[in-house]
Length: 446
Image (cartoon, rainbow, N blue to C red; front, side, top):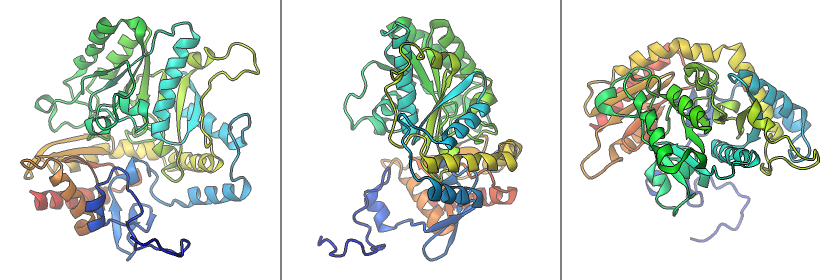
């Protein structure tokens, strides 16, 4: 292909150069799904067609899109301070945002380390866990425990503890010394459950087997998503997280919650840790912290964990970790404005109030052709479709295409599983619209 001679020219119709992430590029470029702008609950295509957002961007636009207070805050911040390094320097909004995030977290989770994404948050938490044991004289604790079907981002740490095969198999042996708990989902015992399934708490006891195999003195941390989102919305069984917490306490193992999806209202609370009454040692967040407007992530650590690092000469760095854009001024401004919207519009409470209505609407899909299961928790739903013979994932991909092109709806897919998780500003009428459109899509791909 001949390169364009005018590199500054706007070539909006040239799809070749961009290698899209987590996307079948050839299929996409045959029938592109292009979004030009967004407002509140809707995207708009270049030709002006309104498309209802059934996935809050990518689990992140919890306040809805292009909210005026967030836009204004970013604009003001860009005009005032575009960038300030977080190494040896800081700006006022970084302290303000950290304080407000810590105030939302349960228990003594009160020290906030900022980064730029969920993937970076997970790798940060894993590094903090390893370093914590090291500075306490337990440097043999290097083993990390994840869970099958888990998604913890795309860093080498995250894919090592993650449990989605296609995210792992192309990239070699990954980190050494990683083991996995079994996934918590069992269709036979849990199908068509609203909220947390009754069956499955005993699966946490598999951690005892892993401890017996490797020895507690070698295990640094266990990381789980309270609700596994990217793999298809898998709520935790009742009592499961409590049992994990108990076993970790028994053996001195750190418990990490990956709340990149569940944080900031998705399950009706600031964090899922509050919903389930379980305080982890480290909590990863991203996505909803800025409502998706500017990339940002972070880790909240318990007070005692932070204190373990605060020894030695005061002029020496305590944790050799960080990012050029940690606590970026624009991200902090967006985060503060998003937290204001969550508070002022009572969006966490709204999600909690709408949960039952949302679950009822999702369950109307039960009995449609090819629907194997529907799961809901908070404002999230996963719908399993029967795969086509010798073409796993094809039905799901066609459903996503039809939803966008024929029904003016954005949904997420994981193979043949559809995921729906709209912004927290969604109305009851829009909930009904989302599931009516999804029902038509399911019938069309049956």
